[in-house]
Amino acid sequence: MTRILDGIDMNPHIQLCDSEDLADLIFLSVDTNRLDRFNPKKRNFDKTVFLDLRDSTKLVPIHVKYYFKRSCLDTSKKIFKAYPRKVFHIAYPIRKEYFEHSQPPTLQDQRAIDISCFFDVDVNTLRGRVAKKIMDEHSWNKKHVGIVGMNKRVGRNTFQQQYFEIMKRSRIVVTCNPDRWEGDYRLYEAISSGALVLCDRLYLKQRHNFVDQQHLIFYDDIEDMVGKVQYYLQHEHERFSIAQAGYEFGITYHLPSSRIQEIVDTIFPDRLSGEN
Image (cartoon, rainbow, N blue to C red):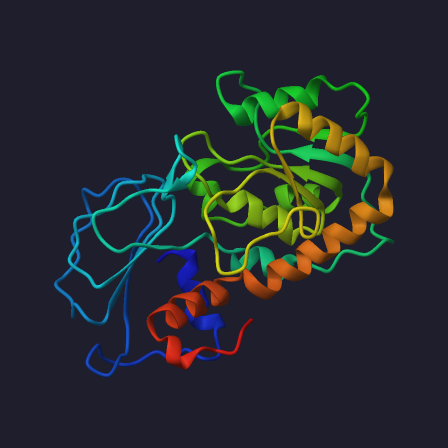
């Protein structure tokens, strides 16, 4: 099961049923690009919610009324991809394990690392070039660059204690979207650490969008990132204020329970939870 479905257990407004006949909604999900083993049973069309959390922007040929999709950016135009059917955007959340290990940031935190970036140096990818730039900037003496813990699918589905501890000791965490799609877990993991997060710009709208200079810092290119890192290392109270606001915004609106509530409120707008 995808980690978004952790939100069913975490959301007090959701109750599991013993049968599909009693349910208002039936959730079905896929989170891997390999569909060779994906063979969903025929479900009630009007009740089934399909969560497509794959990296691929393509749709799964499945007959459901409610199709929620991660990774639906037309990267050439920076707009929501045009699909032949109704598709709702859904983003990853802060995973339950990272939320459970998180604590609100304070000015007294011992953050001995100036900047962390959890990508390997690779000039063939934007992420790799961001990592290289940070590595090459000798003025940033206290820094971490490189993968920590397990990577790819294993790392995505396992809480990485060492990785999280380095983020919690970092004043700034720089992250970056993949080259071919928008959205990954790293942004939300960084937000949960209480560090100030720098990320390249996001184009897909969410119910609760992160606001530049209020919850995090968006950068336009690598040189812009360099200048903004230097600025916020020199302006401690601004850095802390934005990091604190980003953390509070993240755990309020971007947990798995929030994603499930977004889905329910989209399908049943007359039952809105009252969340702003």
